Each structure stands twice: as structure tokens, then as C-alpha cells.
Length: 249
Image (cartoon, rainbow, N blue to C red; front, side, top):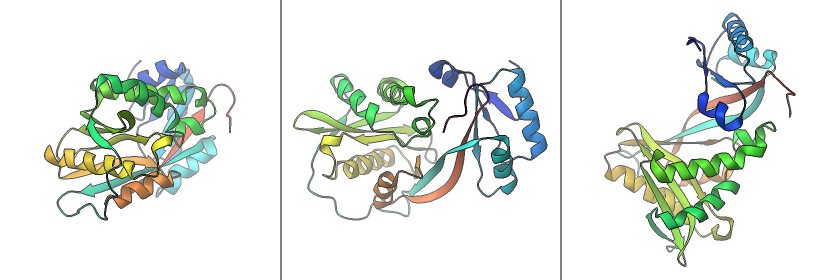
């Protein structure tokens, strides 16, 4: 498949969801560029097209809506500055022991991942919903293998009840990937423990600023990260366009 300056084919997504999936490269564009993208998608038999739009671009948002895209998520990126910020607030008494992931944690982490990320755009797109739980189970497995630079696990009474995955490319390009606590262990401050221990690990590795991405609808996650000292940095709009089959709600 020849490269295109406006759109790219996504092999991993396509294989996992068993659909031909592509993504618009720029966050802003005009109708003429949009027309070229849709022509390319037709020629490549693309089933679903992702578009991460800049909400400040009225032209891009109008094109997406006119083309039939459906808004699936408000991608919210939060920023933590290790140089200027300090984690605020008092932690409750430690409710869990935070340790590095071990192989025997994985069955519990897989169970938690399957039910803990349903604010994702994939779960809210009915065409992907059947495989969205599988997606996050796969993500945590790969993170524990080699995808993440570190996975910290919360243990309570000897059992794994939560996790945070951490990615570290450079002092300014790093942050939290996935974070979740099992339903039976929520309400005890374990999420706060995981986030703060994650930030401590990143800082120990030389991080000077860190980021985390969550969904605009996920108020619990937004409160958790802001309580730890993160601040909203950017908002972007995730759109999906189904070019084959029904455009489900």
C-alpha cells in the first residue's frame, strides 16, 4: 500500500478488529483535503476511518460532521510538571502494597482490565464493542511483557487488585498508560496510591514532566489525576466514520 500524506492504514487495529482501518494524519484540514482522503479510503476498501480533530478548527469539525463521522470521545491529555508541582493532599492510610508486576499477577490483571476501561471510544462505538474488552485485556498482557517500561501492581491481602502502566521514552516524553482498580477494592484510595507511586517511579528515572490521556466522559479518572497534581493540557475530538456496513449509534 503506497504511503499517503493525509491518511495512514493501521495494520494492528485492522488485524485485531478484523476490519480495514485507517486514520487521518492531520488534526486540521479543509474539505478539499477531506475529499482526497475519502477517495483514498474508497480505493483501499477501508471499513473504518479514525479522525482526531482539533476542536479549535471549525473547518475540520464541520467537514467531519458533513462527511458522516460520529463523535466517539473527547481525548483529554493531562500534564504533570515534576519541577514545579508536588502531589497535593494527604493520602489515606495505605490500603494496598504497591509492587512491581510478577507473572502470578497476570490472571487477576486480565480480569480487571476486561471490565475497567469501558469509557473508551472503542466501547462506545457499537461496531467495536464486542471486542473492546479483549482489547484492554490484550493491552495489559502486552504491557506486562514488554510494551510498558514498568507495571506497578496494588496487592491487598495477597491478591492483585489494581495496576498502573508506565512508559518512559525521555524526560519529557513519558507518562501513565493504563490505570485501574478492581471493583471490589475501590473507594480505599488505591488509585491514588498507584498514580503517586507511578509518578515517583517516573521521577526516579529522570522524568521532568509526565502526561496521561483519558476520556472526557471519565470523570472519575479526571478527578483522580487532578488530585495527584495533573492539569488539563489539551482536548481533542475522536471521530469514527464507517465506510462499510451500518453506521451504528
